[in-house]
Length: 315
Image (cartoon, rainbow, N blue to C red):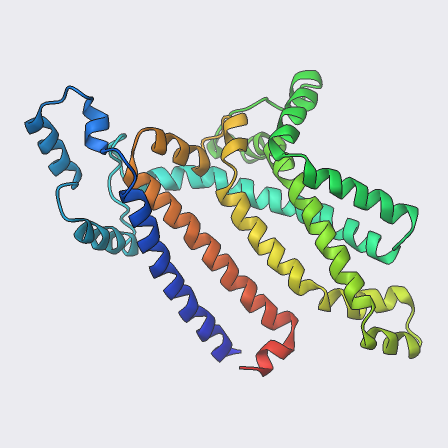
C-alpha cells in the first residue's frame, strides 16, 4: 500500500509541474497587454513602461514563470494587477464560498444517486427502474443553469423560501450561509446526481452478473444480501471515479451558477479577472483548481486500493 501511494504521489508532482507550465504558457500567449488594458489606448510610453515594471511584466517570461511557481510554493500568489491586493487573500475569501458550495452539491448528488442507482439496479426491467432511468435521462439532458432559474422562480419568487441570489457571509451565521447556498447546490447537484445514479446502476448490474455473485446465491444468500455484501463494494470503483471528477467539476465549473445567483466564488473571480486582463489572478486560480483536481484524483486512487485489494497486490 505504501509503495502504491508513493507511485501515485510521484505522478501527482509530475502532473503539477506540467500543468503549471501549460497554464503559464497559455495565459501568457493570450493577446493583449495588462498594462495597456489598465491605462487605455492613449497611454504614454514612459507611463506604460513604468506600470509594466511595477507589475513585473518587464522581466523575461521564463524568469516570471519561476518567480510565480516559487511564490506559490511559499503561499505567495502575487499581487492582483487590477485590484492591487494579494491574490492569495482574494482566493481565500472566494474559496469560502466555492468550496462549501461544491461540498454541499456533492453531498446532495450522492444522496440522490446512491438510493436511485441501487433501487434501479435491484429492480431491473421493472416500472420503478424505467421511472428512475427516465428521470436521470432528463437530469443529464437539462443544463444546470435551467434548473437554477426554475429553482429561483419556484422557491425564491413564488414561495419566498430562499433569496434569489447573493451571499450574506459566514460571519452572519452558519444557517444563513447554508440557506444562501441551498438553491445553487440543488441546481448543481441534480445533473451530477443523475449521471452518478446511471453509473451506479450500470456498475451494479455488471457485478450482479459475475460468477462470484452466482456462487454467493448458490450458498444460500438472498438477492438483497448478495447485493449489499458483495456486489455494492465491488461496484464502487467506477462510482468513486465519477465522484472525484464531479467534485473537481463542482469546484471549478460553477461559473454560470455563481453568475445566476451572484455568488462571490472562484468561478466569478476568474470571469471578472479574464475581463480585466488580470493575468496573475487567472493563472493562480486556474492552477489552484488544477491542483484540487489532481489531489482529488490522488485521493480517489488511494480509495481504489482500499476498496479493491487487487490493486495493492500488484504493487
